Length: 553
Image 1 (cartoon, rainbow, N blue to C red):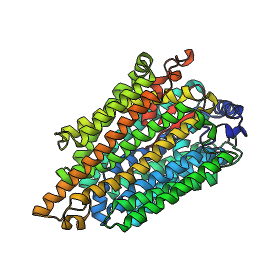
Image 2: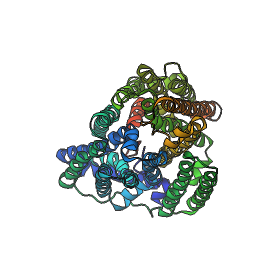
Image 3: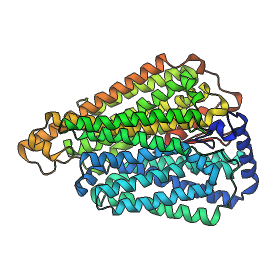
Image 4: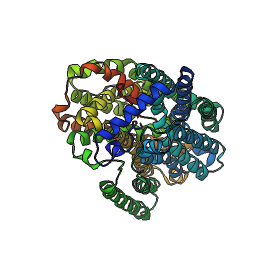
């Protein structure tokens, strides 16, 4: 999920509090894009954009299924694996808000190419990593690269495609994103099961090299249409530091074997909280703030962000531990789990085109509430239902959650744009996207702490010494106890996700203002369904302008 052409700056791009700045910048971009690109150049832009974003999408979904094999191969602890999963989210969530501003300042083509190059090199580093520590460093570099390339991949389309052909280009990008998102779990599962987890990180390299080659040879340089007054580096540093230190505290708690860890885990969370409070102060005085404070005075905007944090936190946390649970408790191969995870994509593809009609018939608030309740059913089905250990049950549970997301995401887009001023849609979408990434980051770390605490609560001393996710060598009674501890810990995670989804339902019912139920404008009657499916697979687009929002994995 990344922001639009105005990403990370909003009105600040046009100067202090200027509502006209972004609009003027968008008009310039459209005019330049319409007259300065040939058909061949536009094809090159589309191909480079698809190749660059595809490697991030397929890698993001495939890595989740490789965590258990990685832990076994590298002899990593639970804390190590939580860092592998979360540090990518740390950098992309903290830096995505300035990704668009960096593109505006230094040039979008150059920023995109740097992002692709960093992600490609980092993928190679991950593939060759001999230790968990070097793998964590590689994942951090992947996050930095993704924060640069993802907002630029669609913004380049708005720069080089004229308005009348932009919709088709974005549609092609969305289809490819959907395919890469869907094939990530089965491909990653197959590679982890039959080849090596290292091939999952080699997989993005040819995509990156091809994207760089095409962008360098066939995409013309062009000056930025508009430059922000400045880049909010202090805000970005505080965001990375604050979120990172809080994540460190949670991950420390995930390996809770002694009471002293309560101090070591709690102190970083306090320090991180202070850093985030400092971020709020910095944003109030920044010339080009990542998150303009005025938007947070809109109650419905805040409620939408809370719903985003709750649902994406519930999803991001449980999906990291779901494959480990299925492997260690029930013995399924990663290839089997990957195929079962296809159940997530199917209902989104089938139901999202209907979401616009459903929103107009029942209202956005009802869509958000209904989707949250479906999430309650899905999370309960994953860990608490009698069929939780069956592959068909996994497919069903994942499919139920896909239905919930197909209801929630388009409604969330509509509510977000109806609740905020039109000139602030870009930065509002960017903040909402960052909330989803940050929620996933904290959920991975927080769920790790909950899983570890629950696991050690019922594990016998031998199983506790082996650790969470490291029970391959256990035999007899100890193997039985290990399996029970894994089931018990995942049931705890399921209850947490059920609770978060239910709170999301309450927020949707009681804190979303009725004023968002606006009739669609005549010129965009059909916009909601198209926006919904793009956002699910990576983008939200205002087709009338150059505003672009991306939600990468």
